[in-house]
Length: 220
Image 1 (cartoon, rainbow, N blue to C red):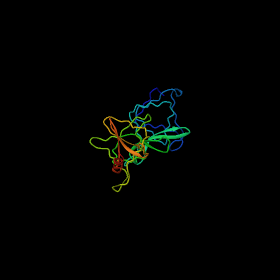
Image 2 (spheres, one colour):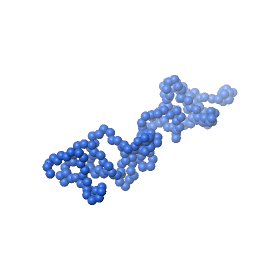
Image 3 (cartoon, helix red, strand yellow):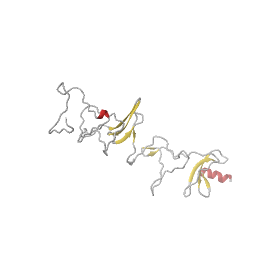
Image 4 (cartoon, rainbow, N blue to C red):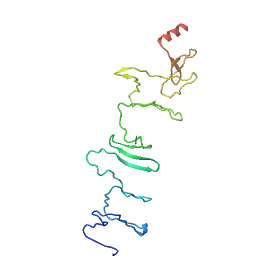
């Protein structure tokens, strides 16, 4: 056999014995240390493709999977990572909800941050906390000229809740931010009950009810 053999037309390499051939075909270059170059398009038809190389280098910009899908897509697709005795984890495109997901326990899937879609009816699944570990103050802001409206406990158009302001310790004053008014609750001086206070840059005042104001007027 010469160093370069050329044929025309289709060429088939097949093992003997049986209509479809039985046995394996192995191509070895330089005892496994050489290169095997396929100059053309490669089509692999079978059940499993195993690659046991240490490093796989691919020049393609994109890797396409699920190429046999036609019509409406209904099957998830992605990348799986085998982890020995640990659970197999994967990154996938979920066709049911049309978003990218990942799992870190092989059971629960979590969304990968993508486009932020406006939710006209957001619902919190837990408490909303606006302070970080270092107690840096956070803000709840709205776009100008909208106010921030707290509208709790709406049931068929009727309010069935309230906005609660928890009290601070008797000697504590929440920090004041310039250009704002701070409202907080703390025990009344000498009374023991909780009162509502408003603090500005120059002073602090206690909000009182009409009945309490009348009582103070009589006492004073």
